[in-house]
Length: 198
Ligand SMILES: [Zn+2]
Image (tube, rainbow, N blue to C red; front, side):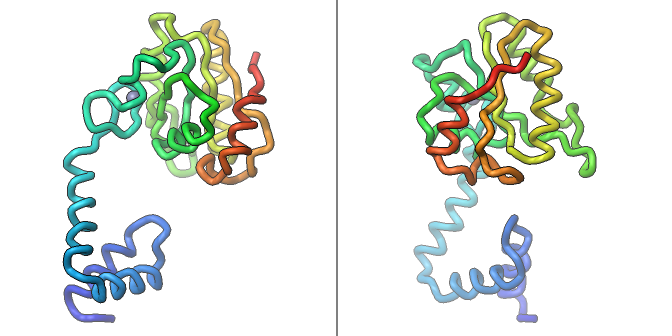
């Protein structure tokens, strides 16, 4: 539709999640009208995040060194683990201030329709972490949708026989949504009211 650089930018923006063609066009023209320093700052932030940020070797959360801020924090409870799908879910749970343990980020949820099986998730790493017996409780906080439920059921079946206390978040979260969209009060309550799976 447009010539050269403008269209390239619209195409690139349009590849981002949640950005449709109209939004891509709007953002592109917004950037065209923004002063050079601000655009540079955005470009730098994008480049830097790819250079500096990696994934925590222990839990899979975003990190700027081998371990993320939470795994490196000695004050966090080492006996309780909260299993979530994505790093953004760690942020959502942290916002509730209900949880003082550590996390395990799966990197998604079981979704056979899109070719995501247990092997594609960081479940093997989870079992390795549980191996030395330090962790005695696992709280499964996957999304309240079909894939999240399937993942939670799969994990519970695997973990309960290992003698680990497994709990699931209480209902009350908006069904079908993402954990990150639940407000912190609702998510906090779901955390507090978690049910043990046996
Ligand atoms: Zn970590």
